Length: 316
Image 1 (cartoon, rainbow, N blue to C red):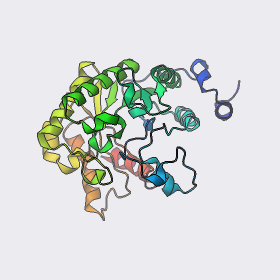
Image 2: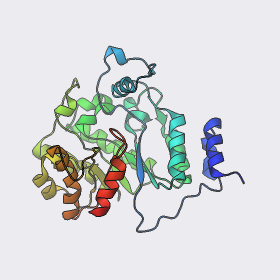
Image 3: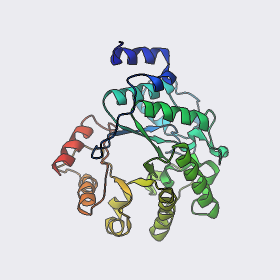
Image 4: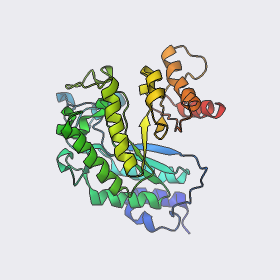
């Protein structure tokens, strides 16, 4: 029998991902009740960071070889799907090979939704293509979880509706999209709603800046979570609202919402920067207040954050 590693190499070369679902070694593993979530967040849509494209970044495909320039190019709005299917395939197989058990997919405008096809970029996946990919993912033993980021700091994927936040039209569109995605994912365990980085500073390069504050933020947040929970799906969010408003957060945040605080730095004990201490201590406070949480690490800035995050959280 061909070894798994040899198969991975051959599949990457041949591009036969569609055949994985029926392979003998790609059967979904039975999840133990106490099993930890070990997941990657993968982006189908990347139109999350900027709401326009300056002229130097308007090429359909990035043509340079500079990592920083590639990073800047990718964070600008693009009307075409900026997605590498070969990389996607490789990541999924690598995840399964290493024993990971979940993939969160940030869908954004990368799907041509039946309810709102007008927000889709050129080259967006059809709903039938998405369902085929979800079948492949499950066949690899990975649990697919949808994510739509409803933070106004990551709103460009909403197309014309990004400038209608908190209007009746906005609520109607959010409802349609959430209900359709839950159906496409066959009622997933979780639905990640994003809700991070809704600050003016995070939108300083946007043409249209929107920041919901106080009761309006909570009104819209409760509306979104109710849409998800009505379908017997558990809402999941980033927890960084607590960085700025900890008292309000821990008073008003429902325990039913799964939390992901995120910190990508290297300081966990001796803090040269007090901001880093604030970010890290939210892990402790979520625990103290009885929330379920999935701590989040990244190789965004350095190559030790994952290791140090695990060490810190194990100790705590």
